[in-house]
Image (cartoon, rainbow, N blue to C red; front, side, top):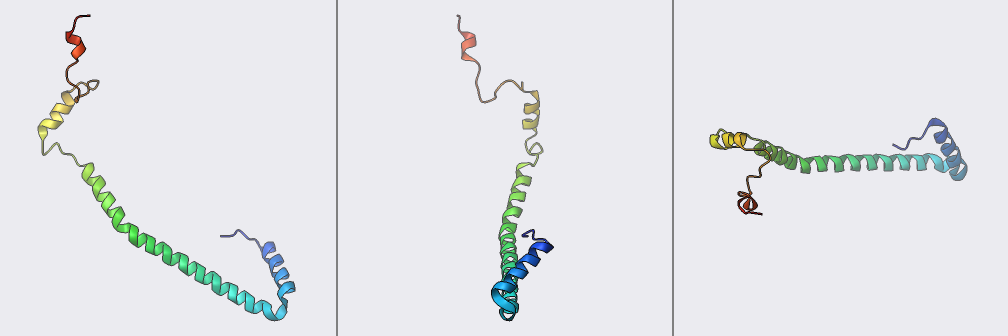
Amino acid sequence: MFDIGFWELAILFGLGLMVLGPERMPRVAAQLGRWAGQARSMARNLTQQFREELEPLETMHSDLNKEMNRDFSKYRPDIGEHAESEDPDEDPDEGPDEDSDKDP
């Protein structure tokens, strides 16, 4: 998490011991440990809540993707045949080219 090695911990412990003294150091270390445990617990709970909230949305998204990717040719076989016979360069929304009937 913090990428602190052994020597960094030893230096921090030594500084804490000099600043706080041997009487207060164990109490402060215990309090820091409790705070770290509470922070981990809160992070776990938050992650779990996010997963619980997002699970129905992911299911809905998956269902929508399946529905969109479904093959509709069995309901309208003429659509599949029509799509295969069309010229791929021609846009089906455009009508016949109006300029082709006119003289230059």
